[in-house]
Each structure stands twice: as C-alpha cells, then as structure tokens.
Image 1 (spheres, rainbow, N blue to C red):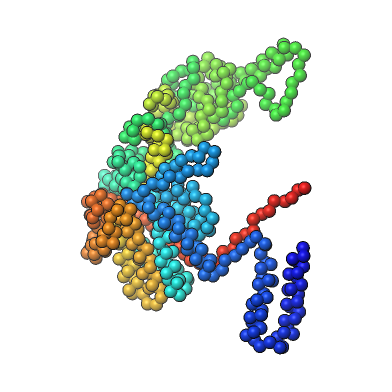
Image 2 (cartoon, rainbow, N blue to C red):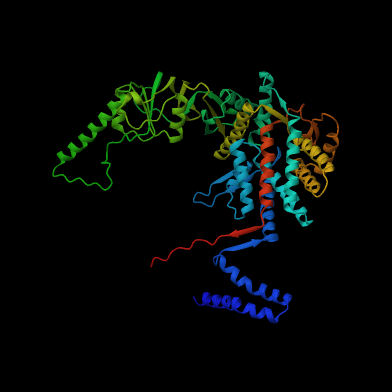
Length: 566
C-alpha cells in the first residue's frame, strides 16, 4: 500500500511541477529529466509480474526461438536423417523414438512465442497434407536466419516481407511450369503414386521395405475412389514377426474375441452397433440404499433387475439382428440370453472401434431400442474369428462400404510399431491428397533448385532493397538440399555447387542422390513428390516467417494469482 502511495505522490509531483521547471531548465536537460521520471508512470500500466520486450530485443527473442527450433529438427530431414528419443516426465515415463517433425514438436513444452508459431505450422502441415512437417519448419527457420542478417544491415522488416512475398510467388510459378500431371493415364498415375509413396517412406523406419509398404499404401488409397476420408482405412498393430509380415486385408478387423457359447461364424450379418449399459448387478442411482427385512426380498429385487434386463434384450432381439456390438460391458446374464437366441454379442468394443465399424457397415450407433424402425442396422456378408500371431480377432468381410480395408502391422516392439504407423499414416495422407490434386514434381532437392534459379533471376531484375530480401529467400531455399546432404555425411558445398551448375542447363532433372553421394537424375531414380506438399511447405513457411518478422514487441501477461480464501 505504501509503495503505491509513494508512486502516486511522485507522479502528482511530476505533473504539478513540470510547468514550473520548464521555465528554468533548457530543453535538452528537460528532456533528460522527463525520460528519467516518466517510466515510473508508464510501468504502472502493466501488472507487477507482467513484462514487455520492445524493438530490437523483441525481434531478437523471436529470431532466436525460431532458429533454435529449426536447429533441433533439421537433423531429421532427408533419407539419412537421424531419430530423436522423446521421454515423457509422467508416471510411466513413456519413450517415443521418431524422426517425424510434427511428432517431435508436438511433444515439446516451449516457452518462446515465435517457436510456438513454427510448431503450429508443423501441426497444420501434418493435418493438411501429412508430409513435409520438418521441411516447413526448416524453411521458415532459414528465412528468419536470413532476415536477421538483413535487419542487422538496417533493412526494414516490411521491405523484407515485401521481397519475400515476391520471391514466394515467383518460386511457386516456377514450380508450376515444371509439374507433371498424368491423371488421364491410369497406369502412369499409379506409377506416380508408387514413386511418391516410396519417396515419403524413404526417410522413415519403413525405408528398408519401402516398395512393399508403398504398394500397401497405394492399394489402400486406390480403394477409397478419390475420397480423402482415411477413417475407412484401419491400422492394427500386433507385436511379433517382422515389418515385412504386415499385410492389407479387405474388410474390417475388430480387436476382440468371440465369447463362450457364441456362434463363431455368421453369414449375411445384420449388425446392431450400440453404446448402452448391459449390466444387472447394481441399482443405477448414486448413493442409493435399499433396506429389506428378509433374504427373499433381496431375491425379489434381483429377479426384478433380471426381468428388466430380459425386456431390454428382447427389444434388441426384436430388431431382427444376428450380431450385437456394444461399446460397454455385456454381463453374463444378457450374454446368455443372446447366445440362446443365436446372436453373436461382442462387448467392450472401444469407441474408435464402434465408430469405424458403424461407418464401414453402413449402420448407426444406437442407445435406445423402443423404435426398431428408426434404428439403422449395419450389414456385411461374413463375420468370422481369425488368428494373427497369438491373438484372436473378429473379421468382418463384404462390408457395406466397399473401400474399407485394414492394414495389419507386425514388428519387433511397440516402439517400432508406433513409428511404422506414423510413417504409413504420412504416406496415406500424401497419396489421398495426390489422388485429388494429381500434379507431381521430382524430389531430392530438385524443386528447391528450380525455385532458386527463378528467384535469383527475379533478384537481378528487381531494383532497390527488395532485391536483397529476394536473394535471401533464394539462400533459404538452397538450405534444404544443403541440410539433406549434410545429414547424409556428404560434402554439401560441392554437391550444391554441382546442382546449381546442372540446373543452368535446359530441362534439367538433377537432384541429390544420397545413396551414391553424387548428383543424379531424379526421373531415372523414380524420386517424386506431390506438388501440393511442396506448395504447402513454401506458402506456410513464408507466411510464418512474415508473421514473426512483423513483431516489434512481446508482452508477457502476469500469471493469475490464486485467491486466498482464508
């Protein structure tokens, strides 16, 4: 209280006596005096624990945070990129081994606001197109690294942003002129999809069996017939065997066992998918207490509960079904009633399981059973029990949605299977997007060199300070093939110089062949990427760099204090 009174007295004294002081003190000395006294008044705008960084300090904090995130993930880029081990601090201390940029960045707890912007663009890239999550962060970080040098050379951030926009547009147009589109030729288009899948899987754990898994992914996506709804493709992980034992199964597999006394095989199944309570051994009122004066009354209550459950089961059977799948438990008594009626009852199918099962069989999840005509049943030709490794599972074949399929992954451990699932999911996402946007470009540093050549030409034709920003954009693009070469242990300076020289020839297909450690023809090596992925990387990275460049002040809010209730 006393400190706030003293601040008030100082402020009051300042504003009362300043007109008097102005008459006796010269202007420069008065300016010095006012700059010494005014911060006392200004600092009171923000709360005590809040702080702000302005101008150069704010910009430097943004640059440092973004560049630190880039340096963290850039070693995972390319076919020879390294993995990271992520260990949680929770009770189980779970360990994740991955080189997927989005997975690494999602797991980090970051305090720097600029770094959070890069993490967000990586998540969006993962959600939108599935691949390029590391590339987008690396490119944004390199753009900011170059911008930092330009700001130090007294070039205004808005001039840099303007130059970056011109360069991004030029780079995108240059890439558009070199795209290949085989949508009218089904055989060539399928080959394009195979090349894209193999290129995507080259930098993942599945790289040793990339041809096999690329074929799995292409077959699964072609079944979708142009849909981008990957819900119809289920991935089941079963430890044991090797990755090459994985397979694609047409239909739907539910990771559950068929109960005792239940039919093991049902043809022309009518399926009711439900989320309802099927237990009889407790009164469903919280805190309820029943007082009885004899054991016969307890038996009456139990009999009443059983009768209630029997009525519910009869209502379900009245739907004319021969398979009942419930998200919750099914206790012994209702299970016995279903078995007597010749109905296969599957309990405790997890929510993801019943959602997908309802989708692929064409049914809807029901919770009440009074109106059978309003409930939509699912259908499939055959339900049977199958064995995968040591486990029994339930297989639904001939489902309503013909494009539904299941990929069963086998592997040495849960860590391997988790990373294999992430890798395969990336490939499936890229392929499903490519089926819609069929344009394809070559990979392995080829797109960056094509864009760099066009952007360099634009820089030579642009007058003024913008040309420096355009040249910086070109240097940031070249950083991607440089990092790919560095991660493979190659001489990046020599390789990039060779690439630059090759790309000055007409219709050049040169890129970095990390297997032989030299410059190779990407068309011959069958290394291709989706144009949509490259376009998303370029535009997202430019917009993120532009957003961070605009920052001139960082205000950190005061933490909310706990109220003292005593």
